[in-house]
Image 1 (cartoon, rainbow, N blue to C red):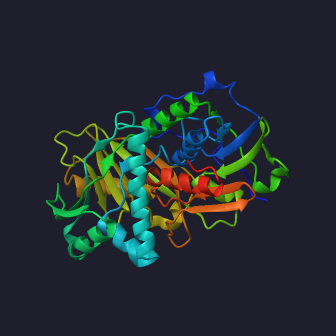
Image 2: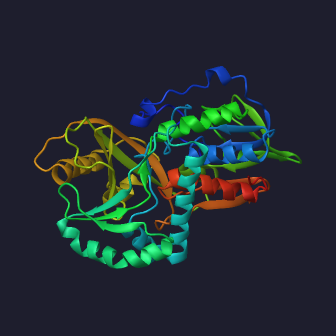
Image 3: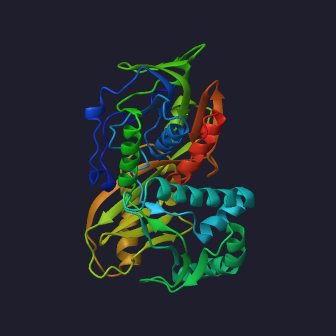
Amino acid sequence: MPNPLPHRKPISPSFWEMDMELSLTKHASNRPRKVDLFIVGTGLTGLSVALRAMHHNPSMKIIVVDQLPINQTLASTRNAGFACFGSPTELLDDIKNHGKNQAIKRVHQRQEGLNYWNQKVGAQAMDYHACDGMEVFTNQETAAYHQACDAIESLNDLVGRACYHTAQAPGSFHHAIRIQGEGSLHPGKLRKALINQLLQGGVAFLDNFTCPPKAEWLQDDKGWNISDSNHPIHAKKVVIASNAGSKQLFPSLNVVAARGQLLMTEVIDNMPYPGIYHADKGFMYFKQWQGRLILGGGRNLFQSEENSTSTQVTANIQGHLDDYLNHQLFPNNAIAVSHRWAGSMAFGEQGEKTPIIQVMDQGVVVACRLGGMGLALAPMVAKEALTLLDLDA
């Protein structure tokens, strides 16, 4: 029998989590034992499910549970805070590996998801800055740059608007392609704004809840009895939105955890990188945040090591990030690092990025495997999950 979801204890916080104050203390009494909708996962997917369901039926009783404290997640507040939908080389790689239709569908879903956040949360609440994105190339990547340039017109046609344009390369890079319509945000503030909206709408939250494996749930004619040791819950319908953790509840799912590691520097004078940046088919990424640089990636170099739900940073990846920081981004400089953290994403066994949105049993839907783009995809994945439960808003 599978073990319960890992990481019940608090984990080392990311910068976004340290920069966000969130508590459920005054809402502790609002925890019903009988609900219409039970959602596992307080990340952006679970919160999106709750928000859409609340809008669909404001009188619906909803509870969202998680094994972590409310101010932490495994991925949603442990990323770089990119409001992005895909760089040219990533999109070309996705078309090659997963087919044109799936790749373009995901880009459109990402764009729609980012628009949803702007409409439902607003730029100020999530500290959103429209800065466009940029894919950058070293001199050794000139061939990849020219290949991407040759595809710009066709990619713009496929996406449906002129997103990609050649641009002047920043810093020590030799080539660049601008990605119009991308931006940067604070994922902790986004999540906090969503939780506050849901609390105001009467949605209940329960953290430190260890969801038992599906085999231990008890079904009756009105739904499901799901309990940890402290809080039994009866739910008419269930959405499992715990991304990489979903496989612990449903072992047959084609879900592979993928750790993403990051670092943040101290404030850098005369920052040469003012926006958000993609490199190496999306496997490297960095951005400016309040005068600091956030840098992440490199998991493709140590893939077997990084197929993990652990949120511990490792010497291999952090060493690679340090080298990239001090040799590629800031040659001949020793840049001080103030924070390091990691999160756990989810892909398929062959690097599949198409989300799993699937009925697993009567009244039970799983919504997971967001392929490292959960921040953008979550609202649209939630919409499809609720459609399967006839609760679409």
